[in-house]
Amino acid sequence: MSSKENLEADVVLIGAGIMSATLGLLLKELKPNLKIEILERLDKAAVESSDAWNNAGTGHAAFCELNYTPEMEDGTVDASKAVDIVEQFEVSRQFWSYLVSKKILNNPEDFIHSIPHMSFVWGKDNVSFLKKRYEEMIKHPLFKGMEFSDDVTTIKNWAPLLMKGRSREALEDAYAATSMKEGTDVNFGNLTRKMFDYLKSLDGVTSRFSTEVVDIKRSDKTTWNVSTKNIKTNAKATIKAPFVFIGAGGGSILLLQKANIPESEGFGGFPVGGQWLRCTNEEIINKHMAKVYGKASVGAPPMSVPHLDTRFIDGKRALLFGPYAGFSTKFLKTGSLLDLFKSLKCDNIFTMLGAGMRNMSLTHYLISEVLKSKKSKVESLKEYFPDADMDDWEIEIAGQRVQVIKKGKDGKGVLQFGTEVVSSADGSIAALLGASPGASTAAPIMIHLLEKCFPEEFNSLEWKTKFKEMIPSFGIQLNDNPELAVKVREETSKTLKLYPFNN
Image (cartoon, rainbow, N blue to C red; front, side, top):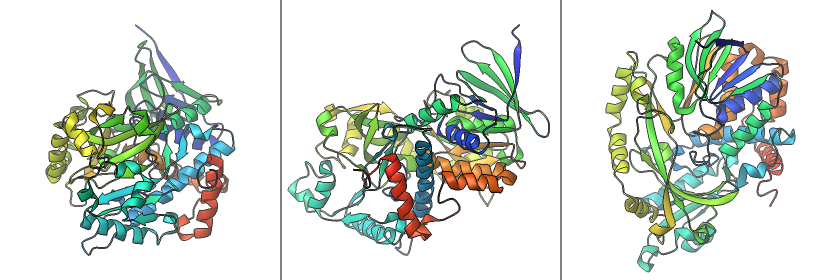
């Protein structure tokens, strides 16, 4: 009979993704003497949702994602969500810039690149919408510099593949695009692994890979016992800690249920899988240098907004199209087909059934996506790149996302797109649920978590001074302060080696 190791820590971080990495670094900057245990069921960091092939990598700043700017019944465009997301992304940029300036991260070109963010539509109604969106967006300082064009030649200059191969008759149709040169591509896999490499070098930080969390139970009123098992050796351990963060991507809901806090009652998750078309033709890859987003199909989740996407992965440029949504009962790419069924509990089963009934269009959409052949997928690609040749593209499996299901104000189940922090009343345990915009807004999400879980320290002069050092705009809305917005962007662009301040 093997013995069980008993350990103690100040903080336990479950999951070696971008969220745990961000929270771990924030905490060590704020309280360097903290003892942190990092637990990950796989054998290295950022293999699931944070990995470059599993993550959209847009650096979600709402420059090009049309689902963040809905058209209202009166015909106006609501940009409030887009403004909120770009504000959050600017916080993440400032935090990454701070880490580079302090030599905590090196070679920013390993994880972030400048690249234009474009929106592209066709048809008179869609062109009208995009123009209204543009006119609304440029009212806000954080979208300064956005360009609009309904001229085919201009669009071709911005992104040649979009117009290549269209017939003369097709070119007489209505097209429009916007372009934002402030856009970025972020390799969250590389960024996360760099963060963990630094964390592991610090005193008081221990990383345990190939380690599965078996249970999370109250030890007493102020601490938690996190029970673990090493997948390779079967060695067991229990870690006692006053604070636990669950940042395990799609697997977070199952771990949160083990903790059994009242605040998690009624929560469930709906898994959405995905695939990319990945270009294998270097000549084609080198002709496109933009992230081009279109309009989502009816019923599509935000993660499935179609985009022709230049990426920087494994030190090379790549070109992807998709993602194509799919359905699997797994909550993680490396998860179990039983995950969805394991998540069904007495307190959430009716919530989940209700959400399913309310979202039949999503169900129909996912079924249609699952049934698509490669040829059908390439036909969808041809709406954005008419000259696409099926032989130049191969299918790449994307990551799993678990959309949040919770009780709405009417008590019925609601499928919620986005991310949500669920924490206990005493702030001793917290979990991050949901998906997009996710990784791009990791820094503000984790700062908000610290505010909820460490309120006294968060409001101390010591912490606020440190936050101001890490995030120069801390406590200020950049969109309401145009001069500061320009200054912050210029400084982060220089540190991170981004256009237009460092060509």
